[in-house]
Amino acid sequence: MANNKQAQKKITVTLKEIFTNKTVLVAIAITLFLLILFHLGSIITMPGIALPSSANISGDSFAGMLNLLAGGGMTHMSLFAVGLGPYITAQIIVQLLSSDLIKPMSKMAKLGERGRRKLEIITRFITLPFCVAQAYASLALILNNSSSAAQITIFGKTSLGDLSGLEIFYLLAMFTAGTYIAIFIGDIITKRGVGNGVTLLILAGILSSVISNIKVALQYIESKFNPQQSTYMISVVLSCFTYLMFFVTILVVVVFINGSTRKIPVQQTGQGLTSQISDLPFLPIKLNAAGVIPVIFASSIMTIPGTIAQFLPNDSGKWFIQQFLVIQSWSGLSIYFVLIIAFSFFYSYVQINPMQLAENFEKAGKFIPGVKNGLDTEKHITRVLNRINWLGAPFLAVVAVLPYVVSLITGIPSGLALGGTGIIIIVTATVELWNSIKSASTTSGYNVTRTRIESRFYQEPADEEDPRISQLW
Image 1 (cartoon, rainbow, N blue to C red):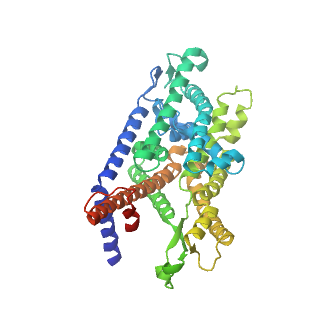
Image 2: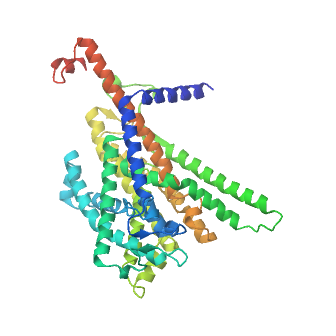
């Protein structure tokens, strides 16, 4: 009971700090405004494209993955139909190349903020060809998959080959512009709002479709029973209840795993040295250290074969891609599983960076009890990170592939099955957003407190370069 009261009091204090902090409220307002603006742009169909109300663009697994990375924009073939997928693919390429594969790019990565800006410019240049290719593939996909009952037309035409060069150029240019506008919105959220802009845009698209997806899933379950049977109502209710319970269970498990941490004790030399274990500070490493990035990266990579297939004729290697490299096949699903694990290991080292941590510990006079500073500290953190990844990465991969496995076994559409990428992104991105809000509140509150102390101490506003400031702090 005492722990519950302390937790409730802590949450109340945190909420009070957030809602009484004007800087944080402005940042939250900016984030909400931009997310609403992005969502409105995602539901307005592009001029020239006619979508029947019965058309289900994201029903296919490949289209559904494209729609996920587009933040829901592909469902309505809006300006943001291509979305952030090409940008994420470009980020993967740049991060891989800058990890000691290409020395000039590796040096840029170590230059701090200046180097990151140069890498970001390179990333946006690499985004362009991927964006054009995916825009063309998306147009081919929706025309090839449309049925006679829900025929999709572009400028009144039902085939991509019937479109003129000017019409195709217009559509490709608009979809490419939409991608760069989405990147720009994400950048503003990251710099002026709260949280990671790219992740929040994807999260907004998923949340906007959660209710409708659950509704469609329950209708699908209901359609599998015969209304003439005496047990029809009981069977439907039990099946829908079981579906929702499994959904909630997976959600709870993902939340639990996402919050699990491995604590590495840290000692401080000098006056900070303590002999009490309970007083030791610690370095927390999450069981899911890489967060949601591995799933997003793996999803982006899996869209590449499907995109290439849209450019190939039917009598070419297109059949091989559709049979073995798409996510709705067992081989493609295995590749997706391995990619999530590989990106989990790779990105967790990018996030934690044992070498940099060991250097920071040595500079700050900190050490891990029983471990020497320098190389031994780096090896110890690496060993702990490896053990954590062998637990967290397979779990992340299993949850992500679960709906596709259920779909392949039972025939249920993958978008209606339990678990999946959507749940992982919802949980991880929401937790990261909450932590960002708390961090912004703490930082802003510290600055306000510091200003108040300075003004009271000197009875007048003090200049930042005033030598008395350094004496005070």
